[in-house]
Image 1 (spheres, one colour):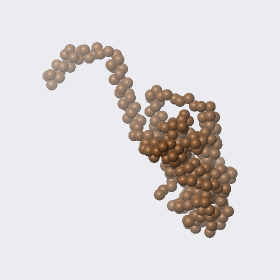
Image 2 (cartoon, helix red, strand yellow):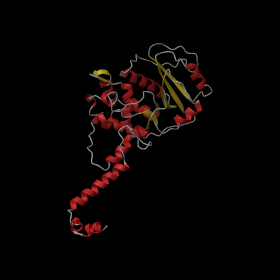
Image 3 (cartoon, helix red, strand yellow):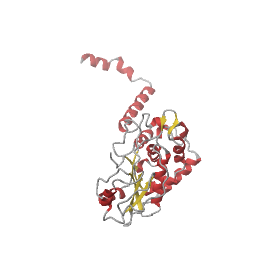
Image 4 (cartoon, one colour):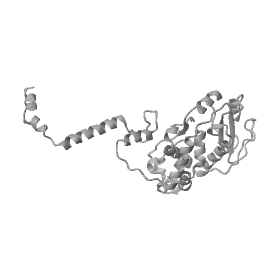
Length: 305
């Protein structure tokens, strides 16, 4: 204790008061940055902000403390984002006639059609059905599914034709103004809840259930093509499940997009570049919505395997 008092009262203590001002400032700034790091932790780009917001929201919060370089948008991007903002400002029009559109992307006959028939029974007027058969015309056993096929084209796994089929389903469903939510399903999907539960859960949600996350490996960010620049940067590239549910505003935005879609049409496909098998339906919508409306999607899917 005596030695400690001697040190506190001796020359060392007096000289510490004469330290240059820049030392004090450096310590203060460093302390502030450490506090910011605790307030806005970054556990990798695929993490969520405490499970409430997308990781982009966390990164924005942290970057507000630090200087960042903002890329200048091209004229095409400015125009596209203006259209998106205008569409997002359009309030949802929910009425007693509002419906959910069920979009079936299938090679042919639906093996679980009878189960779906029981799911829809008694709820006529609250749903619409659209079927995109890519190989053969389905044989139906349910009146709900009869004559619900739309124009289809060849669909190849991993190619942009898969996204084209999804867009073809969406545009046909958008022709009915009562369709307010859109659900993409495969021929192997089955419902896990009652129709009433599904209807309320989806129709009154304020987000689209689109999975979007960062996969830093070769089957995720490694599929990004340099040709996608400048509109789609490597840091913006996302991955997610093909199957989604989407509110009407987002469905309209998908149909309005030509800029970002064209990048995936030209540069996302198996073998476009050596050792890169970019799968368009796993990346287009997750990347697109992460860039233009990250707070409007759930970042997770309601479809389970």
